[in-house]
Length: 264
Image (cartoon, rainbow, N blue to C red; front, side, top):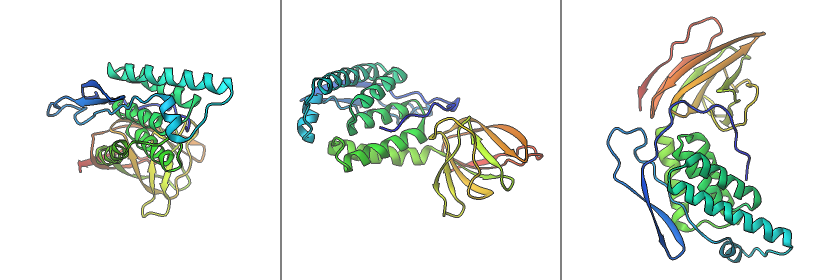
């Protein structure tokens, strides 16, 4: 599983919808309570599949051979189940850490899916989208198989995330290096017009020059710090974006920021 970046998160953290856990034939799923209109976390639900790692190994044709492998699988199963218990109480950061630890010990598409669900519940939407896409890729590559219901859920969550993100047209000085919340930007579609970049996915580090001085940025709703560096000069701008908005911002070194936006 790919490493999770630790870059600064948006200050607007979405509250997950409450859910009830019930066990049916070895599958633990969440039943979402009725959302309250106007709440920031409306529509956030979780589906956690509780599958024994022995069942996973049998279904995937993976054999547990050496004692060290068996120990890793046992620890991965324990962390997976701990993550499910934590998620059932909406302890999302702790559940996320447990699922990530489980994934490091034994990669599986179901575990990656649950990581994405936790990130989504915490409001890290661009990161959750990337993780859910990774879970689908693992399913295709047979790094553990996702049940059909989770394949459908992953696609549905990705569609929901795409509708919730802020879409920002960013103008920068030629040759400028750009970072958001202490992280460089992921270039998703360099040949698009304008190019499409994504914030909140890559690990912390120095900003980089975008493919063009005007680019389109997909970013989580909330408050974000943009940093622009060019010719030895640096400037930071803090801007807040509402969910599902279109906006534009000028990151010129000398000009004051003038972000404007409308709801999509």
